[in-house]
Length: 74
Image 1 (cartoon, helix red, strand yellow):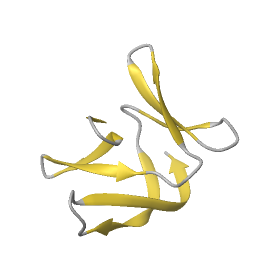
Image 2 (image 1 turned 60 degrees about the horizontal axis):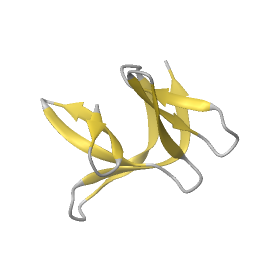
Image 3 (image 1 turned 90 degrees about the horizontal axis):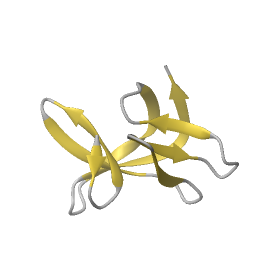
Image 4 (image 1 turned 120 degrees about the vertical axis):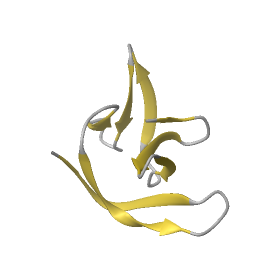
């Protein structure tokens, strides 16, 4: 899902939660999708794909998910 501040969000129980990606990761628009690219330039996530992300929820406003460690595309 798109997020106006962080670029992407996960949706759980119909509630979007912004994802804060690690330093070195960037988001980019690709035709109809948003892609997340790692520091090597590899696409690690794309709108509509299922990924497993290591990280934790942050209670800081806004409530968000802080991605760190690995990103596994399923």
